Image (cartoon, rainbow, N blue to C red):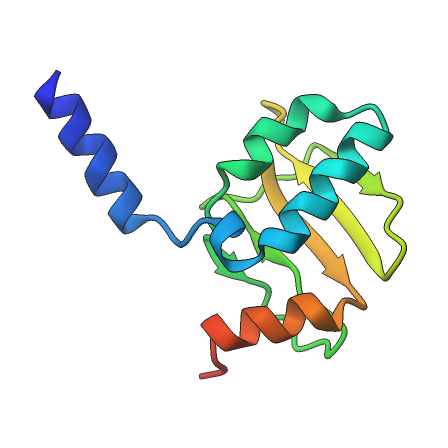
Length: 118
């Protein structure tokens, strides 16, 4: 039991920051939109996601991020955002592995605050 707790604690320290800590407003917006489009089963998962990496495509309108170490997209959920585009990419197991955030300067600004350009 102690070994499992220690492993969970170490994993949490090694994983990237929680998405909800860096982008709390985005998480709440996405949770609302998920419920709105009938995909509320993803809400709990959304709140537990860690940011694994930031998209490096260099598109000035891109604020996308990976939430899994390996991104293999099997399906997507396009959210009806009022600003920009929000698309959740799911792997074959139905787990969120990538969040596409396009034309969202609010998200890009906060990501750049935590992940300055190299």
